[in-house]
Length: 419
Image 1 (cartoon, rainbow, N blue to C red):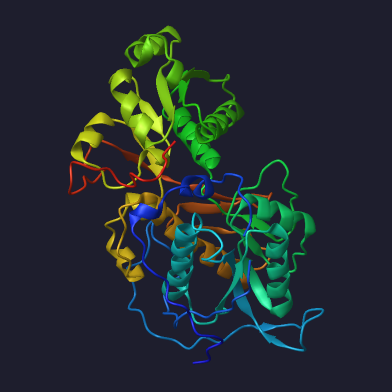
Image 2: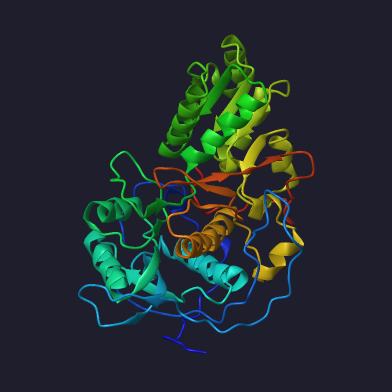
């Protein structure tokens, strides 16, 4: 087998390094991050294109080792006369940011496993271009990847780097940015956004509540940017469905504290509550809402295996999450040979990497065709503006769906800020 460069071993990490990851994971504005290090993964195993998740799939085939044959690539301006094509992965170097390293490790692990499980043997190999925390260096590494023969690019990771690249880059091949677009992002042909955006998830919750007959939802918010973005995403989607603007209550300023929360909800005539919060505040306020109103949330309410007491506090909360977590015991997923962590944030990053590779391979094999397949992050569908939307699966606490942790004394990811 042709090997372009030795692959560095990716270290497994526990759930204790999650501090500061939520802002990155769910689309916050962060600085970019580059050094150009090119590498190549282990051999890819031939597997079927359909992913498990939202729709039925064939039984898992027996994996078989195959030879990787790089796709041919036409010479690019300012590059040598010919190249072997590759899928470039543009991610921050491990030494450039301790806060980003856990995310990068998990995403990279997902990209590699995606190539192994779903590769047919005719996809280009992987090469990693590590970056610093400077957006202009991200652009320099991106140009190096393009000029060197990239057939597609996965990355960059931070929103500021995505915006800088959109403003200054050229896009001869598909680029799958791992963060969400915002109002300042210049939309370019061949530039795609694939992220774990909380705004997108909140929009999905709004659609679910509308389908379930909710007519007067109340949004319960917290005083932090993540909660505000969930609230805005929900409200925009709710009104786009032809409904009036939903009412909002700040959980931190509820009349007479949490004890008066239910009276305030009743006074507004709400027929359902959307928790625009994370796990910690959601668990705290849920018992004060009562059991006669349906309560909904995003995947932020589901940080990982929980003690039975936490599940009891969240009893009845309905939320949406990705197939990789909702169907975690699916035997099909054994193909990934992954020992799961206690942090669902890490698992979501891994799944993001898997589906990012599949998106890149799909765009290489079917240029000009919109992306649409069932991934482990959800049912994926490309919008006309280049955003890859994820349709998630419903889940509910208190019906045996959530798995208790072995210890009653802790909750997952205690070191990471939830809100």
